[in-house]
Length: 627
Image (cartoon, rainbow, N blue to C red; front, side, top):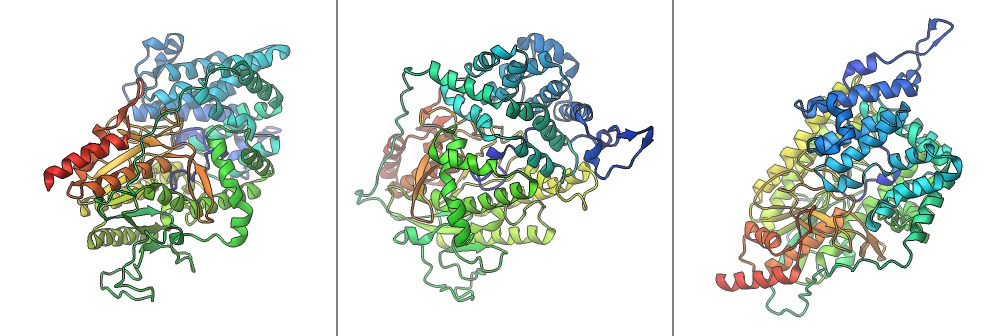
């Protein structure tokens, strides 16, 4: 959860590894030599050929596993690969480092070990979404282990193992990378960063896995087509019957003030439901004396000059050029690479053939996402509940990718984040906001990744990790503060889109545990866990529709987007409806209804899919008891 959930450009596959190695791993990296004389490299990356990357990743991943789980005996790895049933259950962070070791084994030419580690993780990962990881690695290993005439069939056998709802997403990588210049651009971008386990693993993945994938792309595309052809005529699974209740004709339903905490909402699209603070006209003054200037429709915080509107404005030219790609980005994320919209995005990405062009593309797509995200969320949250009035909490720092592009926040900016949080808490309590949706979140590893661009400031990855820990603790304290200061408000938060355990990674606010907080995961249209959803059996207990969910964007167009960002406002919508029919319920009581009336998700997964009809039936019954 690195920026508002759903905006992170996972399509660009910028990181496939873990965090960072011990400092000595970098210091011991072999130095290139010529004629027996050692030359001073112009960059630490100059001395990192494939064998050196393999060594760095192996040493770093082993050290990280020892840090995560000191009792795990990594010397048993060969035995576990031979018999996965003998291995202990693997947490997400250990699984991540084992996949790093698989990439290192592949880079070293140890194909059987590389494949075995992936199979081990698939078999023993606690997170059952990880039962499908490593498809790209296994596919490349199958290709290069087969005679040329049999390579397509070998890859087809690997991809054919995937169930239909996992197949599309697992094969997007083969569509996305179309030429070697794309690989070179990503490597060039990496080489501007500090050497670490994370960046070294990414570099090795690009070189050892994706470069041969691109070289033999026709094999992989043919295998994908063959799997699709073999499945033609199969009955599609029955779509899940999401329960939806419309309160438009419910005369007994009461008004409810809600808020969308995001990167902005196009208020004009929700004019009839937009909250108006009549005591504070927009004039640059704190007319109502609550310490917040111009809080007519909510609270706005953006350090960029001129960005004072309810939503971020990237400019007409940027909207015109990149706005049409929103649909395609989400099609690809959902595994729909063959749609017209997805093909337009693939063509766009194929053209980013150096680091500068790639960086510009990433930043422009981030800006478009920031422009559209909160409005899309608001449309979902307000659907079928005309009794709701919505306030807007627009926090630019919640987007990170624009204002903290390739850097970390300064102490002054962290202080401004805190001021914004405190202002929002005052607004919530002053106006009686009952439900807040926050489709956003923060992770320590994302901050680390951005800090590694500041190699002039941080000489070692140890320094990067220390600073990232400070920033992350600051944000953890911020979120806990607002939840504790507003005990009468239900906060609905997206779990995140990194397919990982929120508690293991300490993502915030998704890893927090408070009585007025509910964390939401995503399911697809068949009611299955979305391939990207974060999880945790204690924290992420409520799920909702989060794949290709239609809603409005600031242009007025309706676009289906995907992410726990879309699942969360579906649950916030239900929480709003519950309070509309039973306004005396407390936040813990609302959350209990959400959790207890949902439909159980089949094992080996867990959680419940929110059921509006059942929840509202119970809420009305509870409401009658309070009259």
